[in-house]
Amino acid sequence: MRVLDALAGLGGRPMLTSEALKKIAAGDRAAFSALYATAQPRLVRYAGALLAGDIDAALDVVDEAFLSIWREAGRYAGVGNADGWVRRIVRNKAVDWLRARRERPVASSYDQDQATSLADDAHTPERAAEISSSARELRKALERLSPDHREVVWLCYFEERSLSEIALITGCPENTVKTRLFHARKQLRSQLQRFETA
Image (cartoon, rainbow, N blue to C red; front, top):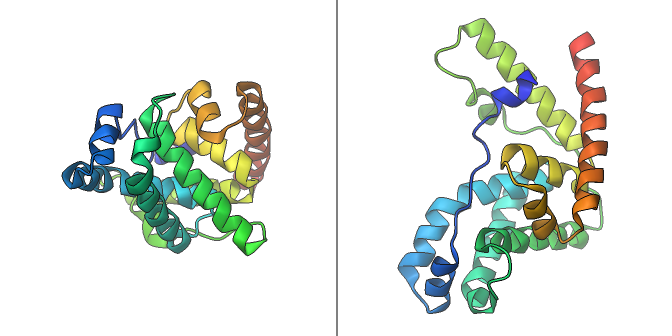
C-alpha cells in the first residue's frame, strides 16, 4: 500500500530494557530522563493514535504515564518485555482518559504541519503533494476506526509489533488481535478505495 510507505518510520522499536527499569526503580534520574527523551515522542504518537489524533490529550496522557512509570517501576515483574509494560501503562491512561469523557473519540484531523512534514525532500512537488494527500486520507480512515481497531493497526503497522507483543500490550488474546486486524484492514481497504476512486 503506497500510503503506508508515506508514513514509514512513525513507529519504533523497543525503547526500554528490564535493566533500565531496574535503574528507574532504584531512583536513577538519569535513566528516567533518558527514557523520557527517547520514548516520549513515540508514546505521544501512540497515545494520539488511541485518542483519534487529539495531541493535547495525548501529551497529558503520556505525562501521567511517565509519573506512573517513575512511581511504579519497581512493580515491573519481568513478565514480557519492559517496552510492552510501558506501552500498557500509556494505553491504560488513554482508556481512562476516554472513560472520563464518557464519549467515543470524535474523528479529528491531525495538524497539517504533521502531514506535510512526512514529505521526502527528494520528491518532486507533485509527488510530495500526492504523498501528503494519501497520508492525510489514511489518517482520516484510521480516525474512523474504533479505538480497539486503531490501536492494533498502529501497533502492527506503524510500530512493527508482533501479534504476541500486541496481545501483551492490549491485554487480549492473540486471536482477538488477529480478528481486530482483519476487520480493521477490511474497513481501511473500503475507505481508501473510496478515496482512490474519488
